[in-house]
Image (cartoon, rainbow, N blue to C red; front, side, top):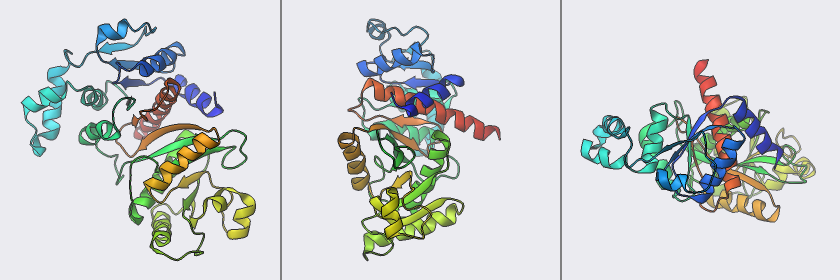
Length: 335
């Protein structure tokens, strides 16, 4: 187990949050839930067929089991959804049908304060997970878009923060323009501070370093870096920059000798989803890195989407991360 996951589990355990898991019919979800409960990391609400969950053989003592098909909360949640969405044409009848869906039900658990966050996606698409989240919870105050990131923990690596990096966006924004890319960078820096606790050093990645190539793709990253500086002038953030210049001190010193970021970056912002998704999967498979995510940023409450190829170990990590995000949200609201 990585030191990062150890840290997330310890922080989650120190201030327990309540996380809803809508995929109680998925064996990986129940395996992860058993481990989380055994370690006393979080309070869990598991949605699904209650009898089937009880017969799974997993030790889930302490978890709250709810079947959205016949829950006592059905009428309350239907009314809540109707009030939230009636301006979009939602009817009470349609709301009553929709809240029987485990994902809508789970998000409504968060919306009504019964849960602090939600983790799903082991057997649902990203669109299925995020649709109710954006319809019901919406984006956080001051945030313009929802994006995603992975925490990558690379063994025996001297780059980043002892081999730990944040990669964004690897899961949501397909072809962000310069403004969106800037917001992804600023939000990712905040996510790094929330989870890792140290100062982010942000590199806006490209195939070009400071004008070594001149084309529209490189120019987009240059423009994004300029916008990000306006949004958060205090950040150590630079670009456009090639990946080796961003991470490797000797290459950074050669390609960008006056840079405060080159050779020191721990947050890598990819120019589009192709680059980000390919990049994290290559590092995960070739460098045997642990990849925690995709973690979402920008939703008004923590809702995290899993890869459908995830393991129980992956789910356990994302539950812990979601707890830490929920702690940070409460701390910010208390200020």
